Image (cartoon, rainbow, N blue to C red; front, top):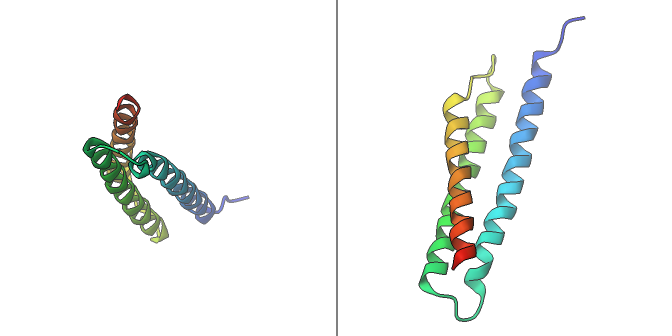
Length: 100
């Protein structure tokens, strides 16, 4: 029985979609303190950084999904590395947000 190489690409594409959805939730939670009355300038800057990071994460996920549509699927080492770096950036933003 030969495995279907398209099935693994489909599972990976769905995993990228789930990751994008979780990044959306994180970005919305990071931006939430900016809507509190009396929020400072730094809170707005952190929220803007979270939204910019979210846009970059969604763009990378879309790019990776398009790479998986090709036959054979293109490797995504640079995309995955950039995604990991942005995730670390979200961690730093979250830490700054908690300490404000």
